[in-house]
Length: 485
Ligand code: ADP
Ligand code: GLC
Image (cartoon, rainbow, N blue to C red; front, side, top):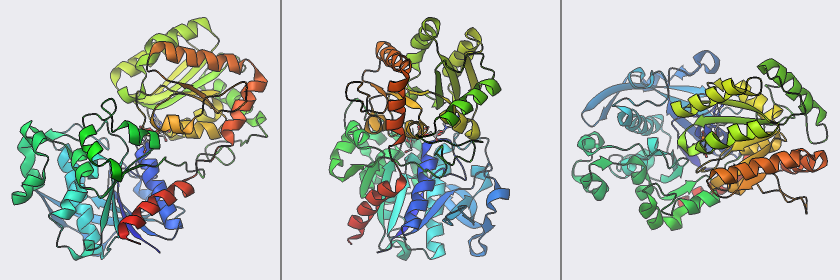
């Protein structure tokens, strides 16, 4: 039975992206569509969207619509783009006053309003389009007030008469908290009692918490993380609300879009390879080392990092470990990322201290990310917490051995290699501390020094399949259960 699914996401590839949420929103919409469902994407019309490429068409009936967010007045319009390849409908909520900023997310005082407005506008757009979804699928804090809005302000709206809600938590570390003095922005009137009262008394409003309280079904992006976020250690203050909803919470590992992330057809690479033809990987590495200005020999193991440089990603551990490893062992390191100043400064200084061996490219660069996945020998993700993580799964397919901490989706997608049985796909360490990371890196380098062993790890990883088709089926099961079919 075909389902109507309205997917609301604050970023979606290929339109806009800062991290994995975009990859997931885009891929899930496409896979649902391919499976015969009417999945439509709603996302903000950021200024950074390449309008030449995607040619969004203004929808004549959805222009200059007044939008009230509490006492604030905006005007929005809707334009429709089709995702290249799949033809999925993507509706851009156009409101330059809110979405024409230097970056997708900001620290501006109206940040909560930007996404309250987006959520409301997307629901209004749904109704005006005559689209009556079976499922409204919200993602992260930005759209987490959706279920409460549907239950209150949109309760009489015919378009949502049969709609059920799902909230996916991609990143519990970002909750969108704002001050209780802005309670009027929610315009709940007499229904304000539905807000989390303890938070209000403590002086704040937590969007993600309200999604957790009011969405009918909750998911997060790996089974391990679903268990983790109900604990005090990983719940980030929301564990009590999550425990209350534990029965409705499912962990579904993210998938990989192998049409973009596969060394057999990667559009960013001049040469392609698979587990039987690893020679081309070695050639790509040589070309990459030369192009980036490495002076190390091709035989020296190259570690890669592609990441937002945020506390979550665990690079604090590298402060102590990487300089020591680089002093003591043959190792080259390619880092691509941007984010918090202390990590940027650390990698800048590391590159200065080990010229020709460490290269830090500060910034966001999709093509370079593909080159690193293809050229590196190992890939480093020492995350403090990782709801799913995509790069370790990309790495597996590229024969780039992931070195990861056993948390969240990293634990669910990388199996620690066992030299005795020959099974396993990477190096997995348990504790979030420097000795554990150092042990992991040393293990990786020791195994790298034994080419037969290393090829075995590479091939084990390359044989893994994390395609979206299977994962999408798990979302569909949840949708169908809610829709009572
Ligand atoms: P998160 O969503 O927490 O950032 P994920 O591993 O789920 O982590 O997804 C990150 C995605 O963003 C991957 O597709 C990765 O390649 C990409 N990415 C992160 N930083 C950069 C960067 N500096 N340049 C290019 N791509 C990046
Ligand atoms: C988040 C998480 C990451 C996950 C991504 C997509 O930002 O940090 O682990 O893969 O969302 O779900």
